Length: 220
Image 1 (cartoon, helix red, strand yellow):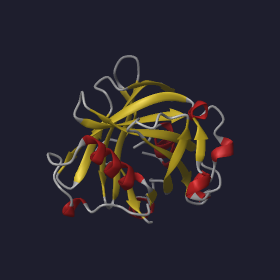
Image 2 (image 1 turned 90 degrees about the horizontal axis):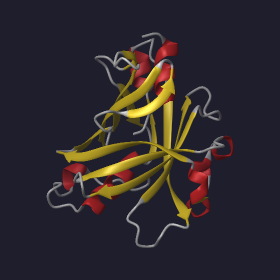
Image 3 (image 1 turned 180 degrees about the horizontal axis):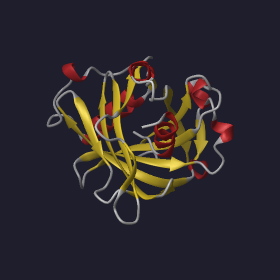
């Protein structure tokens, strides 16, 4: 896949700091409540990851940094068991110009016995660039500013990692000929692998991961 194609895929969907639990030292999913698992997923997403190692091994792969941090959402009920994150992605040589910005709501999902990651696309993303550079106490977002919900990934704990998938029919989109997208995520202490794929109206894959995932590795 050419550099431009891989960059477009990374832009189209993605998803999937300070204190991260060691999965090897924590209880199994059968002993962790879903609320505890949601907190663990959030902790594993927080921080900075990039694809620089993959880019060094594969000249066609872009080097992308993903930055994620916890935020506070005003107007959220105190008893709501959700954790909110802000996430942005940028080419490593253009970190001040993120090409993808999302808010994530991480919450227990009892019906599927999994952790749900619901992504929101802000209507006006530019002012949020570099939001994770603010002190924790200043990362406050009004609920109306989250934007439109666009897709969910459901993650289940498996050994020392979490495996996540979009719903079976994927999520609607309108990117490079695709009308729906699917994603599979492997999230662990070392980082995250994602398999983003776009399909046209006939169900044919028109872009996305083939045999190799997009490989984000933790740098902070």
